[in-house]
Length: 130
Image 1 (cartoon, rainbow, N blue to C red):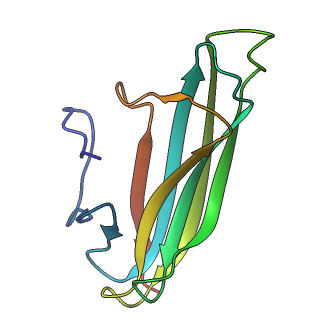
Image 2 (cartoon, rainbow, N blue to C red):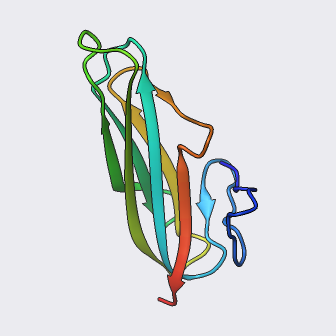
């Protein structure tokens, strides 16, 4: 994951830190976390893929808290099919050492996740105090 560097993209405040696949919050508060994802399959038979937001309150055990299903057509019916989805959750972050977020992905077979052109987006917006 990288932060957008386009001239028309806004950033305010301290950015999320992202060491080793885990996002850490810079300040406590109510946070809206949104995940937009897009995939495609060329020939494999993949009917479903999921993008997942996972959280922990103890910096150890993660739970799935939001998912988006991306359904494609069965391989024998079509090729080069595309799917996208979006999910979000509002989190109350009170402990910066233990409250973290990870992103997960699962699929019934091989699919390609679009990594360019902003087709996978993760947003963190602080809404206010808890």
